[in-house]
Image 1 (cartoon, rainbow, N blue to C red):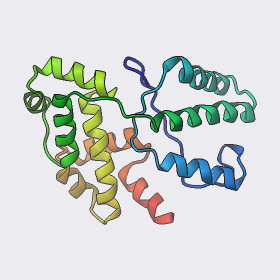
Image 2 (spheres, helix red, strand yellow; image 1 turned 30 degrees about the vertical axis):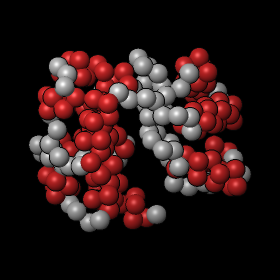
Image 3 (cartoon, rainbow, N blue to C red; image 1 turned 180 degrees about the horizontal axis):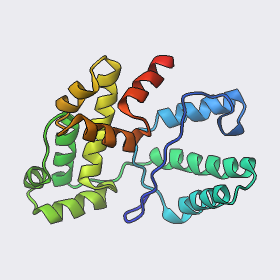
Image 4 (spheres, rainbow, N blue to C red; image 1 turned 180 degrees about the vertical axis):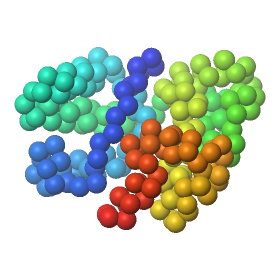
Length: 197
């Protein structure tokens, strides 16, 4: 990902059986590396990574050989792992302050105006500066943190409604919509899936 380009995708790494056609040892190694990624946003050099992901999508759209598609995706994933180990992207002190405030308590009610005030910027300056430095909008980043925290609450036995209220969502249905956008599962489906594993 670079500023201006964001590729969002999810890979099911819950099992190593037939993972991208790799043998179990290679699949386990790759899955362990993916699970160890320090963060979900990885800044890359666009000319090196984007051709792989674009080619992967093109091949998939054309119903190409699955082994060829998997090969492109493997190269892309290894590049992402490599870039994730580099020095994290720099944050200015004002944006770092906001970043740390969001991470400190994902359940808190955070308006963009409050966060802009924390950074000492106007709302429009704040949104632009945050996205330039972290690669995603503030609202996207906040929701991603809330969803990660929601996973913990749900697996600890909190109901969907309790979780939605604890995370300051206006309704449980809106919470479920956001949760599904980030995980591809409804909260109830996510809990069912976790119980099976």
